[in-house]
Length: 110
Image: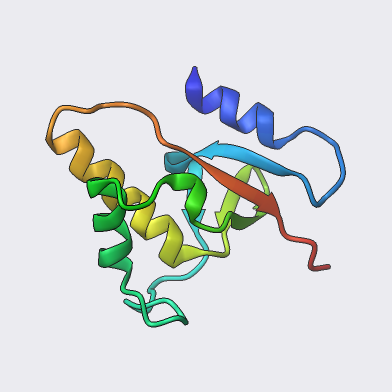
């Protein structure tokens, strides 16, 4: 039901610069691999760790640009997606089994 809510939420017609929230599990990878560091030198693992220890929160991380192909939503921010999924996986390992909704924005490329 939450997954369906995320998909419906993303399909709202509005201005393309609106930010929405999506269940991290509904987003697909747009590439087969990622670099292990962001352009500022921060590691993807360190970002997930900061989320886990409360040094930052989901809202502190820039939203993920997404595109739709067919019925699926693809992330253009695969490092952020990986950090969020790692964060969610560790929380689940310790008994916190909640959906993780992250900020996303429609990519405006033609």
